[in-house]
Image (cartoon, rainbow, N blue to C red; front, side):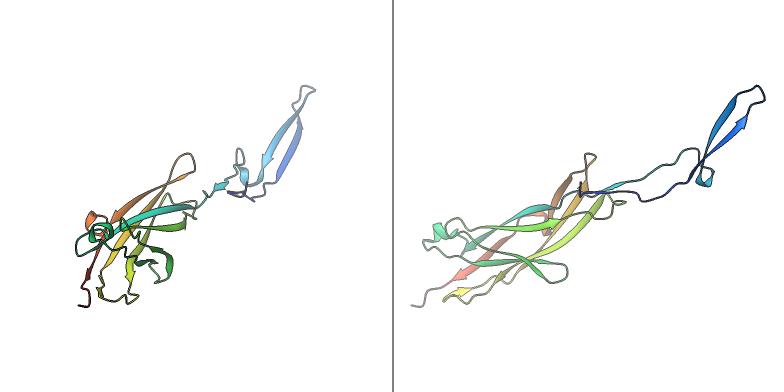
Length: 173
């Protein structure tokens, strides 16, 4: 299994044979370092997981459908190094935004928890009449290694609520 790291420790084993003085030979196993019994420590690294993240888009406080015009906007998920790790278009009817923080894992077998930090932001693609929301929303994803070797996650949004990006629209009259 590619998830298992095998212990490469080598133990030398010797056998000492002695006469017990009663006509019997006695075998005694001797391990390197005078240990009673060698122990091998393997590690297990779980498969990476993808964590879905949701946000919403409104125009003048309404969903695109309520507003009566099917706007679609682009959003980016940015990691703590400033790298864009996912992009998504908002749904032109509901305004829903679905991004994915992909390939998250806890690589260190000695660690049972790891926190990732991301930012969600809107891309200003200069649609006519639109004033873009320049807000950036932080999100933490806390991974936990479970006893069965799988990973679970908790999503913690900045301000403890799913972000809503609010654009303003004024038609050129």
